[in-house]
Length: 279
Picture 1 (cartoon, one colour):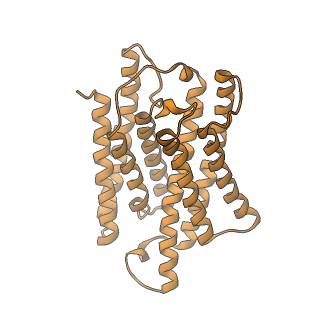
Picture 2: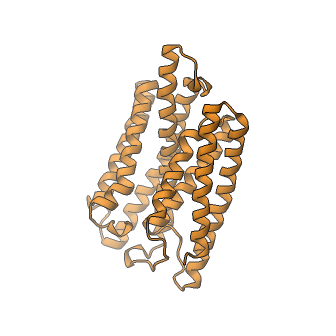
Picture 3: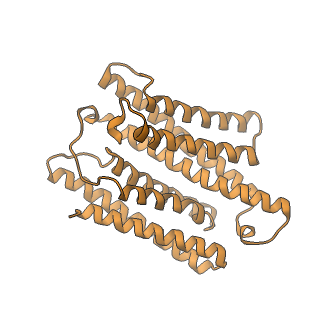
């Protein structure tokens, strides 16, 4: 029988599904009222998932384990979806546009569906994770991942919008924000996420030295973290020094997020190494 925190996360999955459907229906049906419903569902999902994280944390203390709920694949997935939703709500409030929801919230929904297929029980920490470095390292990495997810979703919108503007056609995509706004948001989301990823890598290196006696082992997770960092560093460098905007920047944002997925899930599920406990 599922515990309360898992039931709340299951409810969060349903809410993300409802929000995704509302935003997509609003986009195709040109109904702002449906988009507003999507926003309120996302707010409800934020509340429910935040309570679920707190309940899971409390339940771990009752079991005598007492740890932050970001230490296995199930917990990292729900925390990632929670971060994406909060970052999305901030973007929607900042830009006063709900069209982003049709491209960003489905990422949170699919993440929760994948979490649903994984073991959801609270397990004791393996010795390698019993450190205070865990909090800063994992949280900063996933806040960065959430920002990159939003950037990639908006980059997809940009590519569709740019093609529609070039063709001069009307349709659903004409309701998107201008390509200039979308291009700016692709950049700003990465500006937000990159420092968090950098801090996550630095704290991870410090933790590795504490746990394994070396800052860097070229473990698959470490190698892919470096690849992700280099892709986004290249994005920012090209933007600042070469003036990269538009299609090239959008494609690089999507490539960066695909590398992020490989670092986050591909390494844990396909490869083995020092971080294999994360799967």
